[in-house]
Length: 260
Ligand code: NI
Image (cartoon, rainbow, N blue to C red; front, side, top):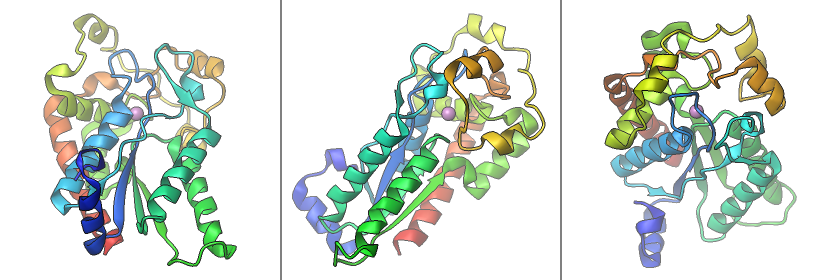
C-alpha cells in the first residue's frame, strides 16, 4: 500500500494490524556517463514497493534527495546538506510517530544517506530517553539493498571487483529492470565506457564507505567520468531483473522480522 494512494481511514485501519512503515531513501546524482541520475531513488522506491506489496505493508513517499555534495561537479546532481536530510527525516518520524507508528524501516540505495539517517534516528530516540515522550519507544532500522545477503552475493558473483563503488554495474542493471523502455540507453555513450575505469586504490572502499568523499573538485579530478571503480558497461537487463528479485525477497524477509 502506497501512502500516496491511500485514504486516511485506511491508514487508521492499517494501524490496527501493523505499526510499521517503509521509507525508501535515494539520491538524485550523476551515475557515470551511461547511468540515470535518478538511479538511487528509483531503486529504493522499486525494491521497497515490491516488498511492501508482498508483505501488505504501508510505503511512505520516497526521499529522493540525499547528501551528494561530492558529485556537484557533474551536471544534474542535486545535493542536500546532511543536516537538511537529518531535519527532514526527523520531521517524517515525528509526524508518523504521533499517529501511532512505532517501527520505521528505511530502505536505502545511497551510501551518503546512512550516516545522516542513523544520526536522525538517534535524535528521535532521545525524545524518549530524555523523558519528553511517554508513549512506547519506537525503533528504526536502515538497510541498504547491497547489504542484503542474496543481492550482495549475486552482485559479487556477477561482477567481482568491477562492481566498484559508484555507477556500479549492479545498480545500473537494476535501473534497466525498473525503467524498462524508459532507460536512457545511448550507444555513443556506451562506446566510451567499453574500457574498465581505473581500479580503486588499495583500501579506498574501506576509507570511503558510506560515500565519505571529499569536495566535488577533488572527487571529479579523481574520478573524471563519475565511475568510482565500477565497470558500468557490464550491466545487463537480465542480471538487473534477477538482482531486483533477490533484493525484494531479502527486503521482505528483513522487514517481516522487524515489524513482527
Ligand atoms: Ni547509486
